[in-house]
Amino acid sequence: MKVQVLFFGATADETGEREIEFSLAENTNANQAFAEIVEKFPRLKNHKLLFAVNQEYASGGEIVKGGDELAVFTAVSGG
Amino acid sequence: MSVTIVIPTPLRQFAGGKSEVEVEATTAGEALEKLTSEYADLRKHLYNDQNNLRNFVNVYVGDEDIRHLDGAETAVKDGETIMIVPSIAGGNVAAEARAEKELPALTSDEYARYSRHLILPEVGLEGQRKLKAARVLMIGTGGLGSPLGLYLAAGGVGTIGLVDFDVVDESNLQRQIIHGTKDIGRPKIKSAEDRLKDINPNTNIETYETRLTSENAIELFKEYDVVVDGTDNFQTRYLVNDACVLTGKPNVYGSIFRFEGQASVFWAEKGACYRCLYPEPPPPGLVPSCAEGGVLGVLPGIVGTIQANEVIKVILGAEGILLNRLLLFDAWNMKFRELKLKKNPDCPLCGTNPTIKELIDYEEFCGLNFTEPETQVFEEITAKELSELIKTNSEVQVIDVREPHEYEIAQIPGTKLIPLAQVVNRVKEIDTSRAAIIHCKGGTRSAKAIDALKNAGYSGRLVNLKGGITAWSDEVDSSVQKY
Image 1 (cartoon, each protein chain N blue to C red):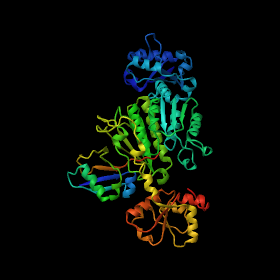
Image 2 (cartoon, rainbow over the protein chains, first blue to last red):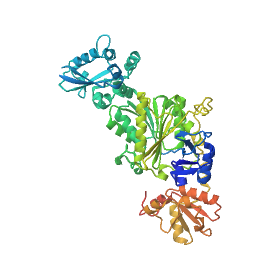
Image 3 (tube, chains in turn yellow, blue):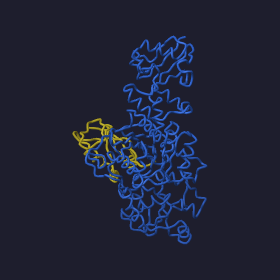
Image 4 (cartoon, each protein chain N blue to C red):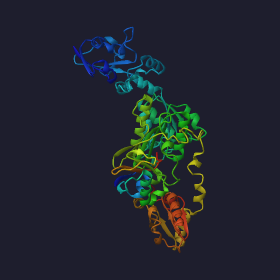
């Protein structure tokens, strides 16, 4: 199944992407999905990443469905 | 004479759902009599038992409150509009009357100044008096604090506290619009105070020319109703959050990165705090600051204005605040997105079994105490020494790890450009048999490059140019453009 993955802030810099289509196996949960994304973009590993599924801060156990919107972001500190 | 009476949203339910009612009258009082005789339910919301207009009901003819005209006897012309502006949203009259008593009155100057707020039912007289009574503490008077302070002062927030220890630098002016060119070199809080006083002399400004610390934050926050986070570093953001949670204050948060912004209202009593969202700080040095990574000047203008908007709504008691929502704004693609947040029951600060019960050492928490010795182990060279070295030793190679668009602005002659992100992949282009001087704008990225090269197993001699090309421009060649 395909999902949309959005990258914000430093994660967009690290991946060189802001929005991609990403393939996942059926019945993948959020933790697994984000592990696969980090696998594809190893430069993300250095960051304290936060994840959201369908515009909701993800705790990890959520089952991801085809067409879902996943987001990867980090804290930013500028002011 | 036919006049139109505009009924505010909360009172429409007592006027048959109408937003406007036309009546025949020659004075404002007569018009209201006609209105309330037609809609009896409306009467008790507008008049007290002595048949006087309730003091929290404002009636405007044209743009003027009839209290400043002839009261009930104020004449109305044919076709004129009368506006009823309650400072309340219906409901418990006793509680509202009590709240009304405790709020400061507006002066007649303030009625004029805030007229566009007063005729807005969502603000109204009571709301404006709440703003006047409010005490807002701004942490930082930089990019976010600039528009924030301007709008809070303009909008009538009675007391604004400013915390900053920095002085105005020329490079601030691209986005920190509270400061002007004449303020370069002045303490930011002095410059901000002058500007805010100019916008609104009614505003009481309290300044604290100090760094916010674990020692002073709690006492300071206790004196205020709302705290606004406009700082530029993680350690202060955690400090602001923790002190807000420990003192029960809402934390109106905004943060920026290049052309992206985040905003939220963290308020542990009602929802998530900053730590519920970000339990741990990022490793130090990983996320570039505005000075290193750049920032679109208008971005803090937008994010700071969103913070001002939320501060005003928190003070007014509005329901639609950014609570439990993280707003993500991308100025380059002009997209606003929103993530839903929840209070984390395991949050060490505001969860069910908190383990953080007092302020901690935030430098240590953010890993900053341990980074300095690490960067000290690099071999360093000053700009002057490098200039001598180049003259006497043709073997030396100088590697510039800045970005190509920075290289375009200024270069040290004879350098090779390999941007930081590529330095490990292009390691073969550096000759291990000769000393390599690594430089960037100010010395931070070059230190990272050396670190990355060493970690990647680079065996040659690496030397960091202290102060980067900026120091070169200051000490060796002033014709090299500073930026």
